[in-house]
Length: 202
Image 1: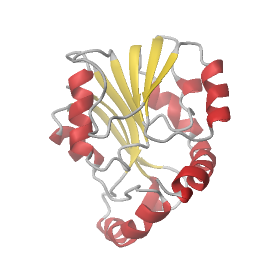
Image 2: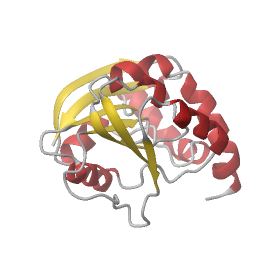
Image 3: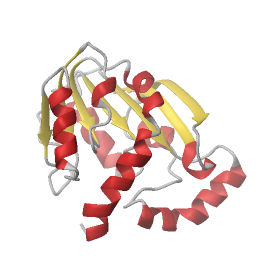
Image 4: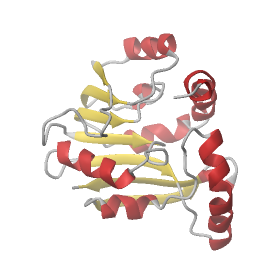
């Protein structure tokens, strides 16, 4: 991880993701029980989980803004455990461990999203939900073409973030069934504002 990704990008990410605060609560509303969060980032989801959450296990390869993250964890109304991601991308948990998994603006950055989603499905109890909100590929062909052109630049300035992934197709390919999917545009440039919010079950 370079200096930009370690010291500069986390501040940019934290500031940019605060603009998405109004969208978090609805996306996380179905979460309950023992929850796995993939892509914990700077902990902005913690204030938006419902009361039904008993514990959160957080996975993220990025360790940044530690003081700010520690303050957010201390304010959470449930225990929060942080775990490092293994080098091979496997999750350090047994099969069928969790009642729910959550991802918010994470799948865009994972190098092998299908493998990651299959690992998430492995550690979820049968029928347990994956709740998510992600940005991705537009249904408008003109916007999608521009996303494809922009994507090499986006991956550099976004520390690996892809603007053009078809989130619903990735979720299905990994073996999940989509129970609910909302498509809408958030505020901001359309190439980064095409949202996929949903619930899927393995």
